Image 1 (tube, rainbow, N blue to C red):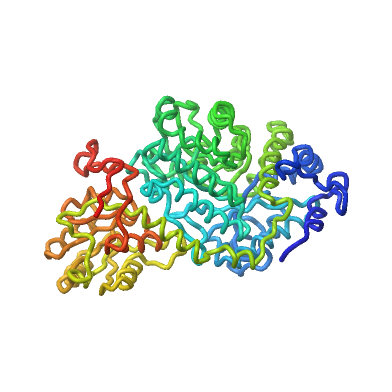
Image 2: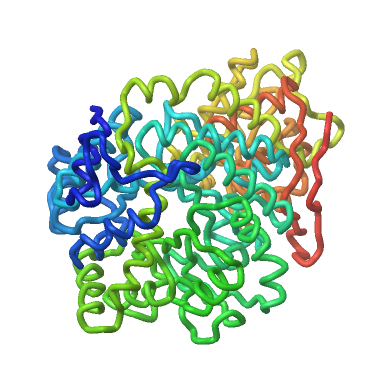
Length: 604
């Protein structure tokens, strides 16, 4: 599906004074930048109804693989949650400026379907009076958070890239990942994470962060921003003012960050400063309380001192500010769902992301303007920022994509090879007593693979033990696979111990091991068999502190296929371990003492 520029401009226009089709000066672009100038964008805004203006500020989820013909179960879910049948009805009713894609909302089955859905959304929006293109977004961080799976290219996540330490690799991953998203009609990516993970107990960020060193994280964030945006996709650094030091997940609670203002400036601010210096298009807020920056008790998402005082005025940022999802508990603890969007706009936000009840949020903003709490001029400021971004991304010129474009870009061999090469440079060898690794086929041909099999984070093939077994088999080993889970029972442990009797080595995939975890029992019982045991941390690298007796331990930072296969190539000696810890690992029994510092990584 492709629409000519002339047709699109006519659909976008609404008024001949703003848009002339044919040979006249249609929505004239600036000569030097190719962007629509503010004067023309303000003219577009001046012709919108108040309801259309309110709609432009919302970015909403919608169920279904198609904009007009979703499956019945998705129609039912839409009717229940939003009061519309499909994306086309959502746009007609609320005139939303953005739509966010999720795997669980069945938006991302495969690249051709995603492209068709994107085109259907644009067609539905441009068919409205004074219709504007929709800014389609998603969370494609890579690693453990990605919404578009195979056959698209999946790269190592942030902490893995941090372990690789190459800004060039980070930029390449952003450029290729961004190009593939754009080919499918997604023009805004909620990545990269700019949080500095200084708390090993952080339940929501962890390996989604590039690491614990603010300057190193800042360099990686800037590289990824440049990568994504060179591909014509808006990058989004998150979660401002910094979500790296918390033990509470803001999806389910209201985290409080106790950093002083000086600590914030030293630890949390550098990656956001770097993102702004790199020309970041959008910044996402965090549903966290930072009393040193705003003592009111409000979450940062609703804090004028933080979003306007610090982000806009002190850091000089004038791009789009988008909230984290308004369905998360962290932003709903103090205020009702009708107050949250109004307070967010008063704080300085431009895009209101995924409210739990769109009718409540949309009508609350409408009434706030009609009642004088918000001015129409305040809405216009945010709409101008959103339209500037849509113009910069080429959406107003041509919002459509093609199936041929998908085939030329998404998951092509050169992209997949780049992901494999980058992943190899991230695997970190933490322990290698007695030179057990690399494993040789001559001495350790038969390998038992056991361990945790968390659900695939990003539509990769999985489960992890199967991927590890297949990768070993491909390299000439004889692999037996036994999934033991994140909390192996006594019976499962006994089965694993019995299976270990006849093999040359055991590979255990560990997943967030704690002092009380039965994964520790599994590893210790396998060690007691006398067989060489190799541990592979498939999420947090902190697992190694809980496994003091293993002779070899590697960190993969994620259980996506690309990272697991790379880890197997490293443990088999087909690639050298070059990754280095981007976070410190503390001792299990003395958490104030460092077991392995930032930069630790063994070589062969």
